[in-house]
Length: 173
View 1 (cartoon, rainbow, N blue to C red):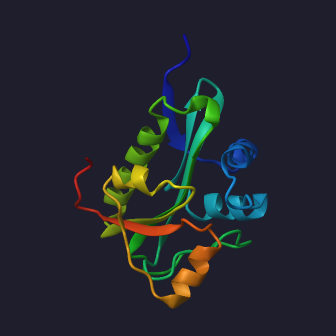
View 2: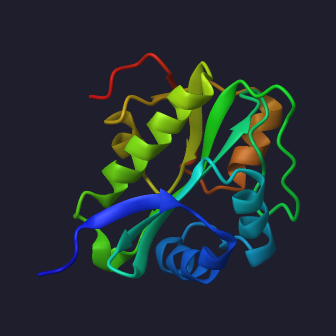
View 3: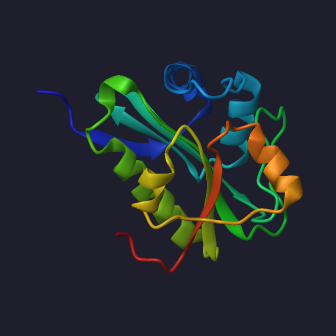
């Protein structure tokens, strides 16, 4: 019997496992660099999480307090949080293919929503990729119409990328 999964905050020392999982999960975009992923973990240690099964990291979620109208781009070498965030931006959630179907993704979303409540931000947002918008809809996220500058940025996330948000007061379905 395998160990019960648990969620904890991500640490810089988790980066090799995060990069391994990222490389196994993304096919529609080029995986982000170690520098970029490390900058996000360092900038927002209270909103970045890993899921562990025993001693092994099997999933991660990186989120950043950010500005709703200007989500961060992919693979930035630096991550400077805005002074007045108005969203908790879920930058990345990835589950190792061998751990899928175990409920770990839902556990990570629960940790993310708890962080949203703790920060008292009005909404959560994300860019859904690789046909994941229906999954995010089940967690209360809805597509957001985007203006031209943001639609250009979304193109870098793959042809099916969708900007989505969820109000903080939305009950989890």
